[in-house]
Length: 431
Image (tube, rainbow, N blue to C red):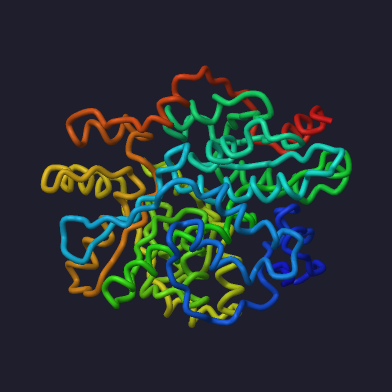
């Protein structure tokens, strides 16, 4: 299978080429030249088996195809349980049982497993650039830590991630560098995209991306939707609807692709924080990216969601059809806080702010009479946001052992201006 750019001004690439490059040469995002035919996507015995089944058509004919099962086994060695919530028919898909307690571990570990194989015979290090609004950077750092021939440079908005997220980003050292940028996530993302399209820089410092713009992160994220929906359908005979917290739209795009390929997924509703570019669009307005605003659900503080390009590609730029297919709902900080406090007081449930955003949206859907079975994608462990969650639940949130190990390490991040020349100079210094 070949992959093309969403901007249609770059040559087609193989899967290996697209994963290695991260971003297409014309600045677009890689997508399949043709989607695989729909088929019955059922759950395997575990997440790795579900992933191998779902991803096989994308790997067909590629040098990585022979290693697909091994890559999945290597990457997916933790559970993604679908658990019932207090309301009958409501579930939570817990995606935070990986090493950094966030769903980003799924895509990051898969990408690392691919790139270590692709770079095995290379004599020049590859630098992975990643802009993060909180969780992506730590997941990528953990996945690539001490991998030979690979370096990671993480950019994050200084003061706009939680203290524990910031500690994770700077606690690895070795081949991992953390840069705290005096700006927003959108500034970080813009600088990463510019570097990836800087041909002169790439000649001296080969670069790739590990953001959700990377095909190597997007495709494996389909796996947990295929696994959960397949298990649910096998048990109940019913499709599973999803409410997905979204910022850069990668997690939701993975669910949308899984449904397109034949997974028994029903409706997909997008839950955002006060950054309401997507809700404004799906309500009939223009797609109008703007500067992001800071919220307590900081991983969704995105004003220019990159994967919207992929969504438009999937719907062939048919705005009317796209708007008819999805709903996006914005939730402010006050409502997120109230939902976290209420659900704990009434049911003993504890959610991170991003999951709490989606739970609030699901409550609203139920209040409007929405039927069927629904799952909320729980994107991060609440212990990563203790300064927000603990006052709302009236006590400490237990820290998972893997997260506790990372928090016990010393951490350091270098300050950097939100200016591309500053990033370019740092990257050139790596050579």
